[in-house]
Length: 178
Image (tube, rainbow, N blue to C red; front, top):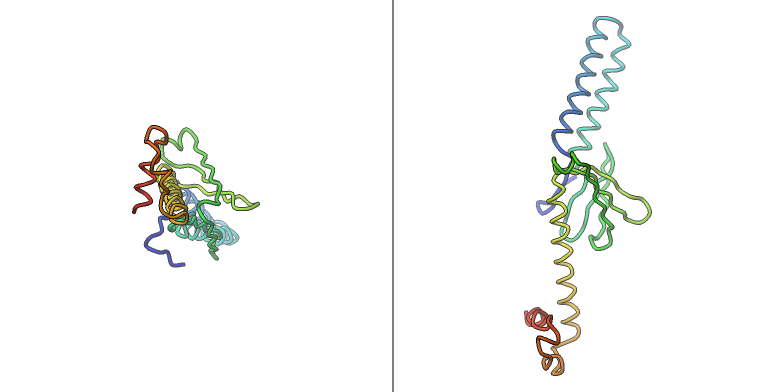
């Protein structure tokens, strides 16, 4: 799966990934030594551990979710990765962090797209939260420009309003004149 250079991919924390991978490889090494010294049936454990390790690595390298322009891209699957793209303005995003997660800047992102929620562990949660807020604000600004462009130039009644009566008049006029 090719990832665009403009995609900002968010994955689980590397420390947790490497600790789990080290644990899996340690159990695999124990199964290998037991298979060589005790009984060959322990080699089945080596095969299972190799499968679990490769599943963990492929899931980590595929990424959990990405921001692509104004879309949120959700990656699902282990060996066959599926990509689900949903517009940022339609996705209902919930962020959950524990006390340790706040210290390590990691947490769970729950994205509701339709009926099924998508859950993933993500590191750099503050950056994700900030980027989603920036993209949503950019979408709001684009929508305001589009509605002002569709309505046409400001009317004389609008221009006659004073800034005290309508404090957003100057900001809206500067947006419509761009």
